[in-house]
Amino acid sequence: MSTDISKRFGARIRDLRLEKKMRQVDLAERVGIQEAYLSTVESGKKEPCLEVIKMLADGLGVSLRRLFWDL
Image (cartoon, rainbow, N blue to C red; front, side, top):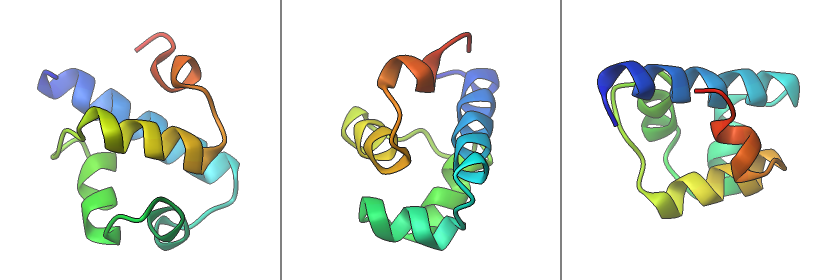
């Protein structure tokens, strides 16, 4: 992912998490990742692997299509 798409993807994760009224710690626990790692994904500083992307989609209760729609 380029930096721009990493930031947009992270913002999408954050927006969906907030729509669900979840804290970072809640999503991180649900998905099984560190809260600090989730923070770096949401800020666009880290690019998650496909497995983590799928886990995030499942944890948010959304499809991969919705996660990537119009990035």
